[in-house]
Length: 409
Image (cartoon, rainbow, N blue to C red; front, side, top):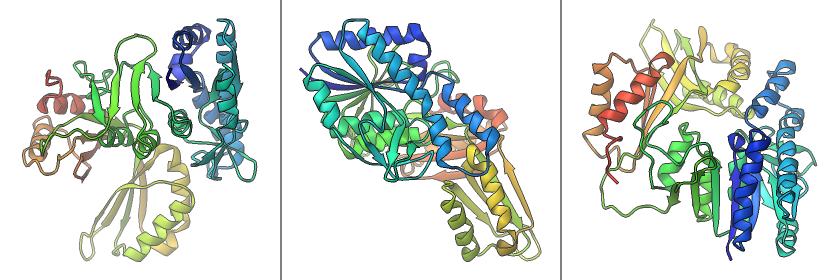
């Protein structure tokens, strides 16, 4: 008998028929004698609708009431899933985050888990009950509901796998695993049989929607066996494994893209000093606005000096307000926020040390007249900011140039 955490995303529980279907998957595991803990997201599209409601009333400041609203989607799904399992003659009980005491910090809309009590879940399993846990939810020390950020149900599932010493955490979604690129964008994207935690973490952080980066961080930290697979087609998925042992062999694992970010451009006749940037980024940090891909160009005396960086689109209105509040301190001339961009990231261990990859990437985009606005590199990634209009073409030509669609596994 094994202990499994099984998480079903929004598309997997999008309606009553889908909930009945995944209840059947859980029932088969239970009938095989395994202990199962189910984690569910809100129905597809519901969280977006709830976020829209909160933004229509307050778009410039995040409060605990935002979490009260957005956490409600999962409450519906856990109840329905427990009912579906009960109709299959299985004992099942639904639990919200505060009921099993998923304790978090007080960073509303993006809380971090501090501690999870296992008592209620262990008692349920001992008594042959299948717990159905609301993903995404927690409760702070001041007894307020919190949410774990978009994709936070993945984080809930892996955190439960860690504290319950589960044999595996299965993430069910609407695709059959992790691909070399989004199969909805690249027709010949190839499913990976396995990928390392480090590579998966980078792909997830750079926009691959199949897993949330925080859940991959947890799986790496606690050495959780994970797999990503489809609740629609019962085929083998992608295993998330420890680092592969190919000595100094560069392996491009995939291309991720992120449409949820915006580029901030600050221009000034005067140099933007490190002290000014410290004041700016400290102020944004206090607003829980994450920053990525910082680039500063000192154009010289009398010319426009430019500071560029990337923020999440959801934070762009608040970022604009906060930066304008600092205008007299920073002393800039103009501020522009461009949401019509996409970040494309090429991921693979050893990518920077391979002298052929970077020129190939730039040459490929140049051949197709695709301009690059910003670039960042690391040992495992090349990140590019381009105009949104060129997204599909850029990903497709890079995927072909890097031969990711070839059968190399």
